[in-house]
Length: 81
Image 1 (tube, rainbow, N blue to C red):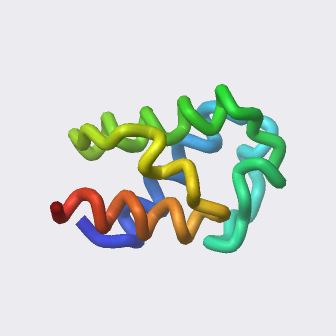
Image 2 (image 1 turned 180 degrees about the horizontal axis):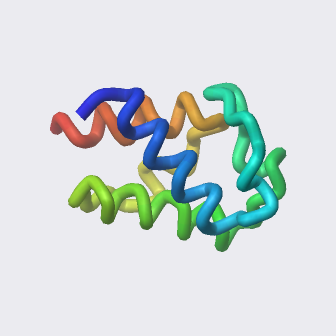
């Protein structure tokens, strides 16, 4: 799976969990927190993404991601371990 594929999944899940962002033009530098996603929203977005990719990664291992790009890179790296 490519970083672009993971990014698209994350964006799709953000739009599902935070419907107010349906028409937002997402950038890899966007922060889920800055977009208005609370901690429960962020956890749900990440869990939905991991489920879509059939991955089991502890959420704590992805907690350091400051923006969508860092989250995508972390998921991609963990998927190849």
